[in-house]
Image 1 (tube, one colour):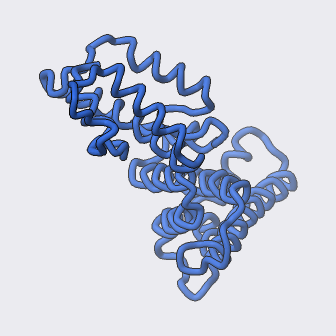
Image 2 (cartoon, helix red, strand yellow):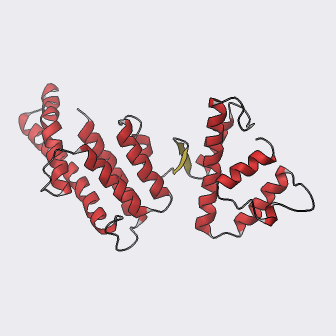
Image 3 (cartoon, helix red, strand yellow):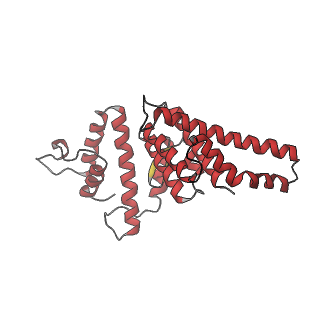
Length: 248
């Protein structure tokens, strides 16, 4: 993966204190294996949260350096082995992570699987929210979910609640289209009314969840740390709302 200087650059970018004396012995020039052994010893001394954060940082820096390697001629001396990314993906999956846009995301999050077909500007908002969630910034994740949807529903009455504006935008854009879709497959009119009303209610319920969590736990309103499970459900709800608002 390159020489000692290149490995040291990766570790430094990942917030490993390679400038400290323990990583820079005065009596000899350490090999890469010595450097990594010292990093392992240092990591074992760290509390769980900082240790996990640094490990994620190291993986992401390796991915970024690898990407630069593919785009430019040999800037860091990293291996050009085509199987490197595949091996990293396998290793991450064994530890409960997936690689999404050069970032590590917990496997238990449903949202990354749903992002690929969304428009880039809204996919980016959800990506950033997921990264905030991963890093333990639950209030920041909620704020990004709210603002991403708020961008989509521009034009909805501003004197209404977030939930009401989401429902207004959904009905205004897609409710009749959805009914026409049901008619095209021969659905009975009474069933069309019931199914479309239930879809509208599901969008409304998802919006209410995000509105409630945001009012209590977002950056601007944070009273206490939001439970991770609640934020995870907010991610699922936001993905569902965005898809319903954008699909025709």
